[in-house]
Length: 199
Image (tube, rainbow, N blue to C red):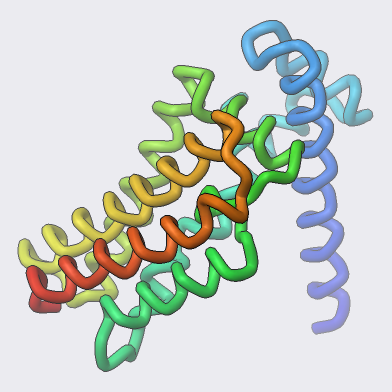
């Protein structure tokens, strides 16, 4: 049992190290200017090994947000009020300046978001991530058309709120100025969801 734990930790460390190396190179030179072979060489592994961990070049970047893919589904599992559980989680993320909420002005976070939203192939891959998140949430909400419609609206609200926060901060607004508006916008958006959805 302990050996499996060690093996899993080593695997996760490899994912993180390779992803960090790739993101550093992409930020320095641009996503399209860096080849997978260059990433593998910089990480000290072979190209086939890299592809065992990351099936596509875009996954080297999106690894940083992969753990959020099933977050909404986990939060609503067993929740008496799924929308309220998601609202409280988003507000808590704003409070701690979680990068996934877009309310973070750390230079590395801003650079990562610029890389992500400024690279068409990464945007396309990120939408696939959102679709999987939406599907997992719909399943947690009971499946069926109503659950899928609710999940689509919830994931869209979270995405738009986060992108608006990032957009304003990237344009130079101080995070302290954006934060109160971000909280109000989240409260309004989730309030509308609560009134509109029966989940």
